[in-house]
Length: 83
Picture 1: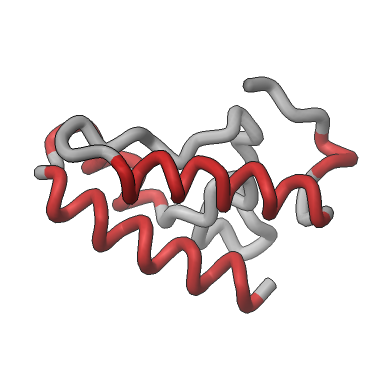
Picture 2: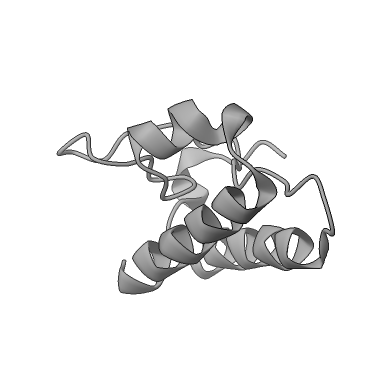
């Protein structure tokens, strides 16, 4: 799903992220990535403003276990809620 920059941090952006979170929670295996194809770093370069993952979380995603991915999902949803 490609989302235009104007969409970022709108209610639709957060709804799309929550939809992906529900898919992740329902997945028995193969937890899906939170990437929404809004790949842009925050001003302080600490996280992606599209999916709210840190650079380390993005880098490690493909090697993470499903349990680790679920923890990342919890963290990024907390970050998104704080935005």
